[in-house]
Structure formats: C-alpha cells, structure tokens
Image 1 (cartoon, rainbow, N blue to C red):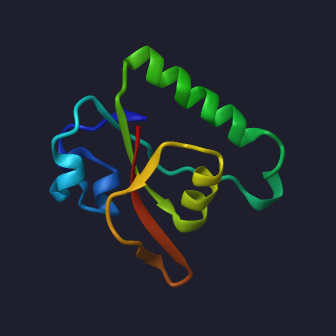
Image 2: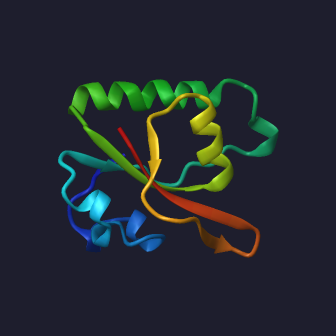
Length: 107
C-alpha cells in the first residue's frame, strides 16, 4: 500500500481515473492497494487471511481512513461475502478480454 496523493504517481490511475471520481475526490488519508494476485495453485492455503491481517495492521499504524483499488469482479464479490466494507465507485470495466475490473473504495 502506498499513500494516494498525486494521480501522476498512482498505479491505480493506470486502470481507472480515481482522481476524477466524485466518490474519491474528497476522501482524506487514502492509500492505494496495488496488484494483488494469488495463483490458483496457492489458493486455500491461508495467504488471503494473512494479507487481510497485514492490511488491518497497516490501517492501524498509518491511521488510513480509505483504500482505493481496481480489483477483479471475482475479487470484489469475494470481499463482499467476507464482509469487507467495500463499495464500487463506478461500473465494472474490461481489464482485458477475459477479466472485468471494479474500481472500489474500502473503509
């Protein structure tokens, strides 16, 4: 996670123009989550649980209020089922031929 400040320095802006979105513009103390990928062969081994613990510790240490990310639709649905406070800030978009992305904010 890195502090989200300048759109020109943002990895997330490559996928979605968060800086132009009204649901993101006025947020304070925002961090962006970069690429997160767990290989199919490594799923179900507790890696995601460890990653969520790291994210929680990061939020406590930095006093982060919001996170933004462009996640796959599958990851978005998974995070919703886990009870994450995740909200789409726009409609899904095509990452490439087979994947849809969802621009989100997490509180």
